[in-house]
Length: 438
Image (cartoon, rainbow, N blue to C red; front, side):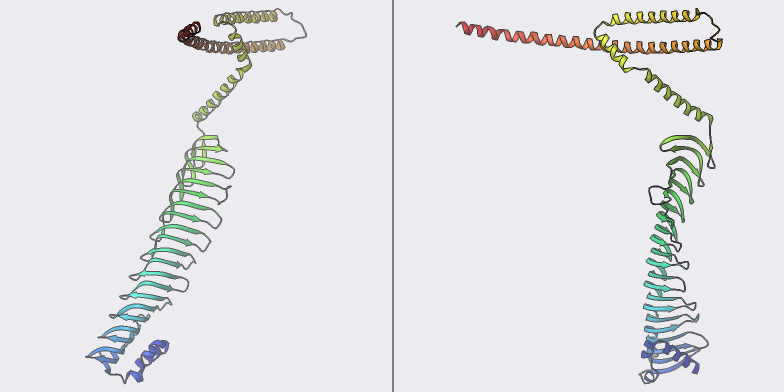
C-alpha cells in the first residue's frame, strides 16, 4: 500500500490539474469514500451503490497500470490520468471508459500525440511529435487521414492529402536536397499527373506511376528558352517510345527511344533542315543504302528542276509574244522551221570548217581534242535552247489562239448589241421628223 501511495503522489505532483481534483485529505472526507481491494486491484475513492462513482484511484498491484480521475457508474468519465502496462501515459478527457475529446498520449520512446480522440482512437485534428519527424493535421480511427503536413526523418516536408497514414491524393512535397514535387499521390508515391522540379533548374511535367515517370511527359534542363528539351513517352522513369529531343544548339531528333537512348527509326534535323533519317541502335546511326539513295535522288531532281528553270529566259518569251501579235500562227510555225534549218546548216558548216583546218605544229592533238569537246558541248547547249524556244513558241501560239477566239466572240456580241440598238432607235427618229414637219 505504501508503494501504491508513493506512485500516486508522484503522478499527482506531475499533473497539477489532477492534483487539484484529487486531494487525499479532502478525498477521505467526501461522501462514499472507501478503500477496497479485489484480487490484485486496489481502489481508493468515492463509491455509490457498490460502484465507483466520483473521484477515485485504481491501481493494479505488481503492474504499471494506474488510473487517477473521475468515475461514473464504474466507468471512467471526465478528466483523468492513466498509465498503461507498456509504460505509455495518457492525460485527458474520458467518456464511456474510453478516451474522448482532447487528450495527450506519451509513448515510452519519446513520441507524443496531442489532439482529439473518439472512442479511444485518435480522430479529428491532432499533432504527433517525434525526435526527428512530426505531423500536424487530421486523423481518423487512429490513422492519419485527411489534410495535413508531415516532415520525415530526412527532412522532407509533405503538405497534402492522406489516407490510412499514407500520402494519397493531391499534395506537394519539398525534399531536403532542394527538389520539389507537386501533383497526385497514390499509396505514398507519385502516381498520375505531376510536376517535378530539380534544384539544378530542370523540371518534368507529365505522368507518373508508382513513383516513376511513366507515360507522356515534357522534360527541360532549365526554365530558360535556351535549354535541352524532351517531349515524348516514358516507361519506368526512362525515355521509351516516340519522342522529340531538342538540344541547345537547335539540333532535333524525332523518333523512337528505348531505355533513355535512341533506338529504332528516327530523323535528325539541324535548324529545321533534315540531315539524317534512318534506324538507330543504342544511340548510334545505322545508315541504310536505300534510304540514302532516296534522299540523294530527291536532291538530284530538285537540282534538275532548278537548272531547267534557268534556261527559261523571260525576255525571249516577251519578244516571241510581240512577234506573234503581229503575225499569224501558221507563219510563225514556218519561220520556226526555217530557223531550225538555218541553225543546222550553220552547225554543219562550223564542223566542216573545224575538220578542214590545217594541222599546225603549234596546236597539239590533245588541245585540238579539247576544242572539239567544247564545240560539241556548245552544240548540245544550243540544241537544248532551241528546244526550249520551240516549246515557248508553241505555248505562245496556243495562248494567242485562245485570245483570238475570245476576241471573235466579243466582236460578235458587240455586233449583236449594235444591231439591236439601231433597230430600237429608228422609230424614234421617224417620230421626231414627223413632229418637225407638223
